[in-house]
Length: 182
Image (cartoon, rainbow, N blue to C red):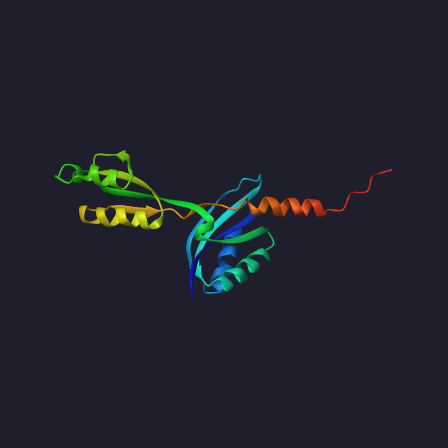
């Protein structure tokens, strides 16, 4: 049975790595629901946060294949309850919805959103939260008119202490002592 998993892939910053990571998914016919790439907490290491809907055995195999990529340091997968995550959504709506008798301010407050920018022709609203929350606001704004809508990929931090730090520390401990020069 398909479940939602968040995969974190820690890599060096090399050209073409995004294409190689995505091709691992493509070859296995696994759709990426969300993809975010950023710096990690470790200098020189980047973090891919990827959301997929698959069976656990497939995600386990996928992570093993990702780790075979040359510039991948380590990859992990987590169930939704093991991560704290959010997304950000931006909605560009017509400026006149505030003057046409709609109570848009109440709608924005009810969804814990905020007005990011007000222009003569449009207003940009920002909402952070889970996908279901950003979709709910979208559905309520659609009858009023939407010029543009965009949602980011998942940004996630895992609840267990960061496994990569433990993994790198274990590698350091396994190193043989260097021979002293005479």
